[in-house]
Picture 1 (cartoon, one colour):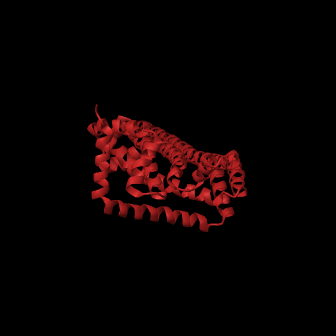
Picture 2: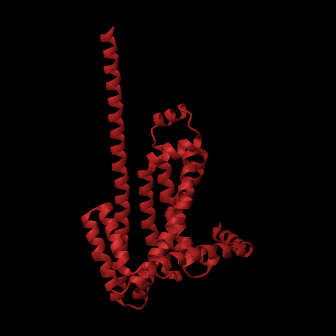
Picture 3: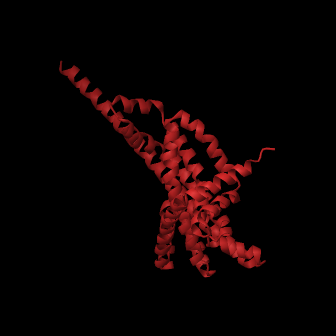
Length: 304
């Protein structure tokens, strides 16, 4: 019998024993980021946060989303779950930011190296299909209980979509565009930052949207290890058989998820529309240049 679990336990014990100082330092850094974001969110009056998110949703996604944001967040405050919602939002924002810092460079590396892509694709498959509860085990062993292990598990769970879609977006950049940039003497960094990433941005933003949604789903699960927030309200409703409390927490999670999803989708749509408009303007300018050059040639021929 092959006992893979024993080898995993040995590896985790070795890491816990020899990397204690590293994990303590990492825990302090992550906890500082989460506490800083939470402090800012709680210091801002609730009505300013609601109005800001409403205007952002209205500008990026339309009247329906703006109205839903206003009514939904007002309902969350009315249910007395504003502080828990801000705790969840702080954990989602910090986890998503760290997942993007890791996932986007990883996706760029996968797009630029075929060997790296072959190695990392199975790893990302494993990370994405692993049950969410499994990530809580090493998180608790390395960091104990609290928000830090919840953030750690959320980062691992939510990182694969943005890495995959970043690599996909860069690989979908037309080859003739890349060759044209190289023919004009663009370096590898200029090619990446001025050609590939701008053209791949809509696909990358779709990955950002998926990362936010997966972070939110994992944050709720992370309430099992005392991560706090709305997940803790839902967990209390389950364990104490308080159906009303569980439904209130679930409604708040749904409202927050819809608001974040619609805003990020609206940002992606705006970017796609502006890029399409710019492409049309460039085509129009090129046609004008060709027309004026033809008119100039015709005038020269008439003068002769």
